[in-house]
Image (cartoon, rainbow, N blue to C red; front, side, top):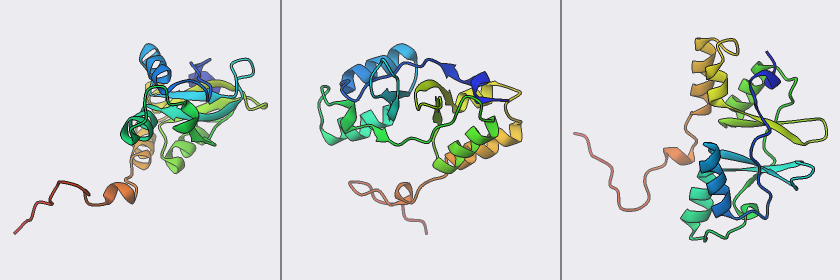
Amino acid sequence: MKALEIMTPNPACVTPDTSAQEAARLMEQNDCGCLPVVEDTKTNRLVGVVTDRDLALRALGANKGPETKVRDVMSTSPSCCGPDDDIDAVEQIMAEQQVRRVPVVDRAGCCVGIIAQADIVRDDRAATDREVVRVVERISEPTPRSRREPEIGVQREQRL
């Protein structure tokens, strides 16, 4: 099965000059947690992605206002796939990069779609149950930062 067969075509996109607030509104309107960031809406050349997590941590959590530009909170150089790539390759990207969404770009680097972890799970032909479990586990493995002790205001429960 190919990426083209399960991707969401023509996803909502933002540019680096879009405000964080407008990006959040688009996520709500499109029921998504990730927007491709394109150079401009004419070419749709992918330059990054912005996620709901980026908005929460890099904007809100850093005391940046709603007019903060997406360029200041987006992730650059996202791992992508092509429309003709096998689903196995998409699963590999998700697992290795620990991402839940993969933009689909054409040969010119223009965003033509996006595949979410849920798209792989929804399509019975895309992956077996065992493969889905393996991918989800690998995507969700804790990173060294998330294993650290809480830094402020929380004491670890002591066990006797």
